[in-house]
Length: 167
Image (tube, rainbow, N blue to C red; front, side):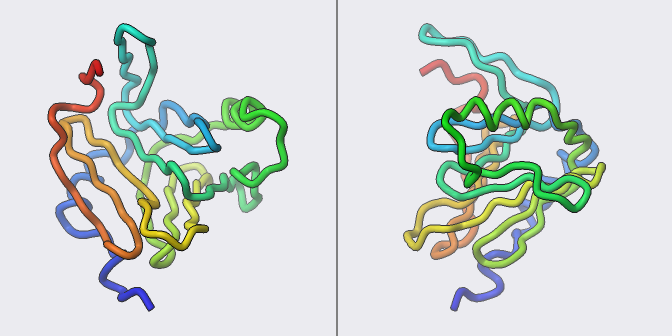
């Protein structure tokens, strides 16, 4: 059994999350293997020699965990939806209004809920047994927080703010 204290969000990370409260969800994107990223705050344009991409100033994401979007008490879509192309999920997400970021709430040692102000949530659900990261948060100043249920929370400073990287 995973100890309760391992998934409670530590105070240093909670203080950083407070900076995001009441900021607009500027994008929700589905990526490779149905990964998800949720941008909060202003949209940031990233240019490098290979591509141009758009991200949120803060970004919450899950590479391998399952996810679902709930709006007004109903599941709207999720990573397990039977689709032929990822773009089908993106069309659904593009049609939703997520509103203002309110919180990230641990539901268990395996699952987290991202809460917005308009009866919309995104649940990040661990469905794998290895020690891979379940959720991560990129902060505008280069800090990165991540959670893996066998390890707990970690926060570290990247080389420079993530949206300034060109490699």
